[in-house]
Length: 635
Ligand code: COA
Ligand code: AMP
Image (tube, rainbow, N blue to C red):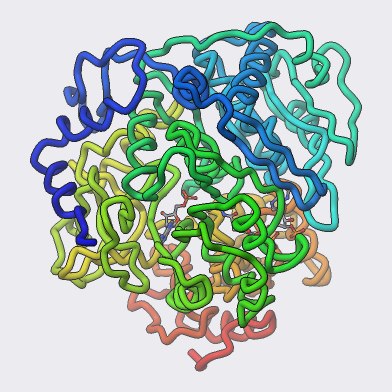
């Protein structure tokens, strides 16, 4: 099949507003928009201004009303508890309507915020959709974050309510959510009025009198409520993501543009048909979970899978193939790190042969750079197209992809293919000038960004401008560096800021440094992302101790490791730090993290001309060797 990509991309370029207005016809509007794009206040752009809509209606009620109430909306598959459960669209709509009734009874109304801190259970998806039903703004916090991170988000979002559960389940251990929730509410200045807590059989918890409600009892008594019509430009959710400092950025997603973009993406990027089974093996706490476990598959009328397990160890490296075959899954989406874990446990892909994967058409990978080895391994063993695509929490859906619904383009390993319609990508040099094809620079997208991407940051309009829109006027700075080749293929190589990517999870080295710096014996510190064959990158800490500290280095390192786990959470995966006498710096005092990273990764490097004292580099090399890094050439 010849690709229709060029025709579609060309149609978008010729008339972006007509393009998105056409796509918007696939959505149910309570009131049609007055204006497709409001562009009067750059860099703030708004899509479908004047339109009124409800996201939950489009994700559930609409399909029931159209006669698809008996179609499966959600399959819950939980190898960590041994449970499986399915919900039809009708049953799921009814559950969500009752939960929305329970939340509304606590006084939550359109525009109010609700924090959701939950493991991968169907109630987490219901919680998101129940908020959407009421026009309330949800903010899901990933379960691997600690109380302190949750508290930061509570103080920023100021939720009326928190929805949570007694525990999450990680292989080999239970994660007690309730002490983390209680700790966060103690730490936070803002106090939510009520918490709805789902008691799980694996570990129940105490409820705080007057504040906490038992989920099941409360919902059983609640009356179902209908969908509240909201402005297309009203926020659907806020999802916090790592920036360069410890203060996370609240990415805002609106209702109308998000509906339009996600519906378009299911058909054109993922090549799906309504009624088919689609699986994103991520977590509802990440943007991939928001867009492709919850919203897109349901808006489009597919069946989505909610998988509470891991790619390996639950029980083995055949877990993904079991799920794909059991539910006749047509497309799956995960991060390359999951495949590296599978490849490590089952290098020859022997377990794949045990399952009938006849219905499986495409594997999609994102969240981090897809290394060619992982791509080849997956292609060879699964014998289906393996599609790398690039996106960010900020954009909510792909910036660059091989649009399978438009006919596949040739794959170039290491590239997420070409800009999707909606994105005019360019690569700029330090002075903001376009570079030649193949030359590396900052990847930017010409404004306006398409529907579905973030219109602003929660409570932080100026930060939106300063972080993303200021450096290259007229463009959105993606924070990624890379190049575009002569065929228009994008290659995303590295971040230009302090963000690192650990097992497909986005973390801020600045946030980890803030924790290390608060250790009483630490005078100065730095964190870099060192290359890791499984997780892509892992954080690595350097500690300079205060004068007069004579405690054992190992004790101080162990304390900092515990502090990061307690304050940021296990997901930071901060396990290794080393004590050094001093850090390499420029003469103006800037820490040379990039040089340290090159040494750790055993890459060849040149000491920058601006370095204050080159003699520090051999010391750093030695310290890194002692913790298993810098195994290559001596500096
Ligand atoms: N709640 C509490 N703790 C959690 C958690 C959660 N929801 N998720 C992860 N953690 C913990 C893990 O238990 C681990 O703790 P440990 O240091 O005590 O072992 C730590 O956080 C690091 O987790 P992770 O980096 O995910 O490592 P892992 O060894 O548990 O799993 C993979 C590695 C590759 C299997 C897993 O990261 C994975 O499946 N990733 C791909 C899918 C994905 O998450 N994509 C996101 C964007 S698409
Ligand atoms: P997140 O906001 O957590 O989705 O992380 C977004 C970041 O992950 C991007 O800015 C990239 O650095 C990285 N990323 C995501 N997908 C890809 C990809 N396909 N190729 C390279 N990097 C990617």
